[in-house]
Length: 70
Image 1 (tube, rainbow, N blue to C red):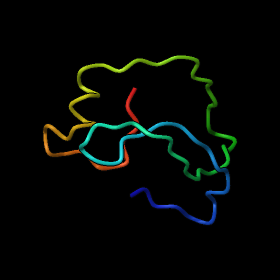
Image 2 (tube, one colour; image 1 turned 180 degrees about the vertical axis):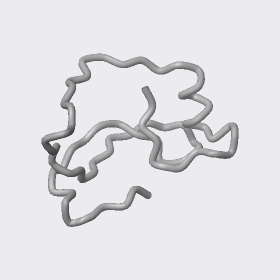
Image 3 (cartoon, one colour; image 1 turned 90 degrees about the vertical axis):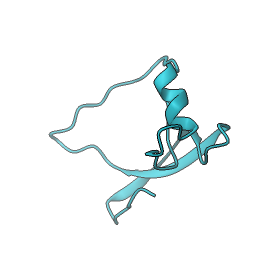
């Protein structure tokens, strides 16, 4: 799982697969506040491609869960 530090103070949420069953469920995690050298973007839409499906189902045996497709 992703390592967090004391700098990870913001709680954010999205959708992620947690195992190879392929079910996408809500996912909440902590991230750090953006610094002066970071860029902020707002994602309005995203899609799922066939490669995302392979990662969700761990078809290649390299997926590290949780995985956020799109």
